[in-house]
Length: 399
Image 1 (cartoon, rainbow, N blue to C red):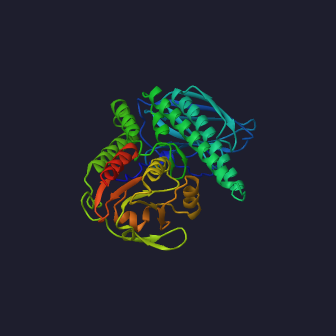
Image 2 (cartoon, rainbow, N blue to C red):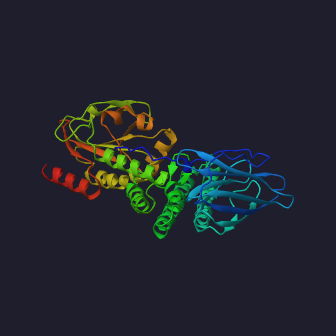
Image 3 (cartoon, rainbow, N blue to C red):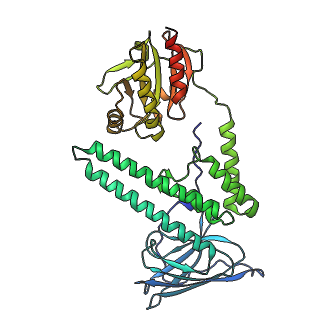
């Protein structure tokens, strides 16, 4: 079952134009337990510009203060607070720097106007952790940006397929390395709310470092350690509630499950790479492995190696493979077919998860497969790796 990604405001970037005067604070009763938190800062090239501080709540940004840099770029922000909280410091027209401040901390900050990549600060252990995380995150993003730029340049090259394979490997290496770093960061700093930022970091829009579909265990770990220490903190309570819902959704039986063992496989018609219409029923009389996959799916590409072994061993038998691609781009689909040397039947609607065929079979993950006997009846579901080979060996040893 596809579980919706848990999203929070801390993974978003907002744009704010700094004001020219200190922001007017809402009138409220004095809080006896509050302490004054102070940020003494310097912005290179920041003379005369405003610096904005906002509290980062789970669902909104709350204005705290605005200060104007003097002619030397120095600024000072002082405010009362009685709680640990996330803040954003806006030091230019776009982007922000994330802070995690305890009441009464005295922070010394140094950066450049309009730049959020390079800065330094002292006096706030939580914010120092976030600075370390941000620097590693930015390194990964820069490398991924370089990969994207090279991909555009290489697209016109006759050797693009080879370049693309190298870039894909490099992409996987960068993302795997940063995910490993993030896991270590989470486990090494489990007593800090800073691990929430590590949990929700993104490589880009729609590309989370940790996905609740594949990394629910990481979300559950963060939920478990923070709920004990920070129960009542809004973002932590929200995470806990969403994890409970995600687990319940995963354990909830499907309301409309796909076809199962012993049932006749639903027939369909879809388009081959050359534009011909191919029906599943045209393959009757053979054992058919109906495989759902995509060229962009790393797991699918790995499972293709098993399919190659099966094809090499049994293609002389009444055995066919029909792969249904959940790609959205024809080039990605056909490049993957060529690169992996998949010399069997292929169809696709190029509609990704909106594929009519995928919905007919209630496919909610890839790779997925159905083994269909010569009469059209399903005799195996989701047979991967060694299990698939052994099942085919058993079938054809009886012939």
